[in-house]
Amino acid sequence: MKQVIDRNRINKYALLANLASIGGLLILLASVMLPVFVEGTSALAAILMVLGLGVAMVGIYYANRWVRKPRPEDRLEKVLKGLSEKYVIFHYPHLPSDHILLTPASVIVIETVNIDGDYMYKDGKWKESMTIGRAIRYIVEEHLGDPSRAAKESAQNIQAQLNQIEGLTGNIPVKPVVVFTHPLARLELVNPPVPVMKVEKFRKHVDAGTVKMPQEDYDKVAAFLEAKTK
Image 1 (cartoon, helix red, strand yellow):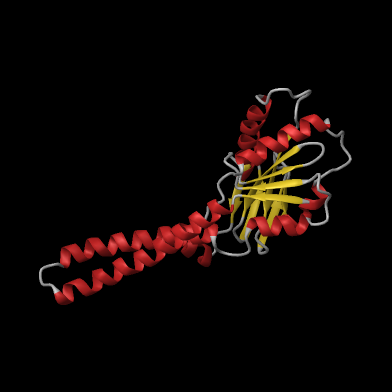
Image 2: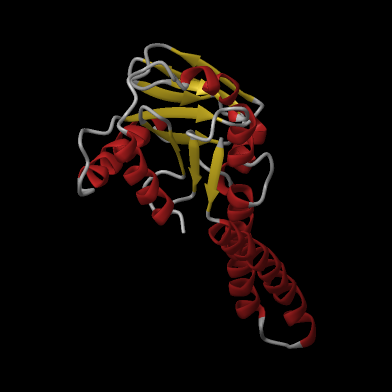
């Protein structure tokens, strides 16, 4: 399997996370020290404290998203290792999905969820168990939301863009899937609208037995996705 990844995007957000975290802490330090050395600055110190806390929380959020391991792309690549070079995974393209797998037969749009916890899909709704630890981290971590709807909407958007590629001989199947990449995620699923699984089971979901797309179409789609990932 081949991978194409936008390292510049990862590095940019990782740098932002570090700058915001350090900057927030410095502002918090200034809010504590300012009244000690300068009289009559209590109001300004209070403003700085709120500002510093906000900036630091932004930094922690981006660190959880772009720095903290295990990284979604690392987990995906590990389970897909060994596939032929006709399978190409694109990480962080300038498209609605952060991870897209091109197979000989289709394009798989991967909506990843990289947070731990217990998650349930039942009666058309997603729910998560809110532990004390999760509640404390909630403001600085990604939220579950509705990943199945996000996957479907991303797939529809990408399908529309692929349909605009000139010279395609046929329709390119675009399939949404939700993959929980955190090793401590636990799932309970009742008839989800799109395939949902833990990352360990994703390899089996990638079906190589379906009808393959023409080589000409495959090459055009690969070029389109690669251009979007640079």
